[in-house]
Length: 241
Image (cartoon, rainbow, N blue to C red; front, side, top):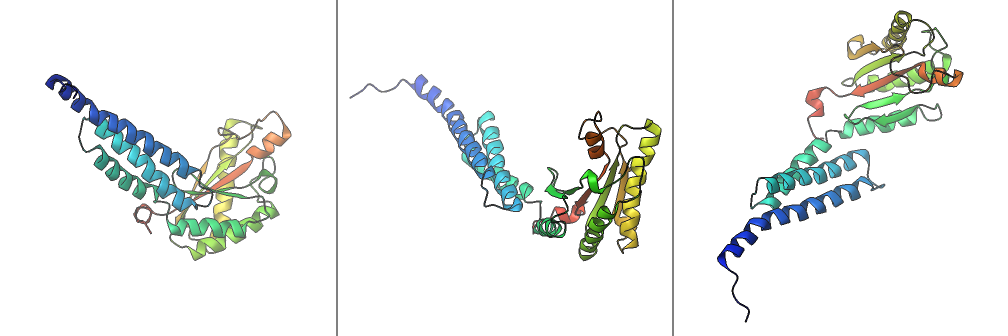
């Protein structure tokens, strides 16, 4: 029979045990979060919930380990629940709108994506947006906005933000005004088709946020654009549906 462990060593082992359990739980939760992030058969809403749960478990376990608590597993569970709620703020309503917008803009080159802060963003390609120095809508963009306005009327609670951009041709003063004029043109078009003006916020960024080099004609064309963001009011976004 082996000799009993001295009391001092027993105390040391007991002290270290929660920390080691915390490291194990953190590693396991991190692995789960990474695995769920790669599940291709999940929708955006499901991935947000799953990733939020995994990362919440990581945070909960880490806090439990750092504070020396004995209920690290309980901390991980609490963190997972909180993370799942946060991750699911992308509501079913917004996911339905994303899919509807994808169908409505299919074949136009418009990219519909979810942003990290749970907004819906329409990336409109430069070749259908604006000519150099102009805030007039090209016919192709008018077609896209016509479809977009119909979707907005079917979802009257959705708020819209239109951000205009320019290339670097011209002065800052001119481009700042032109970028705002482009956003205003989009708002006016949507308002003319029955979307309440009060739902639409506009901003102009001038040439300050390029997405391509202004050294080439192709790059400048990409920078002449508008970006359209959709979001739910905060009260609705905080409700998991």
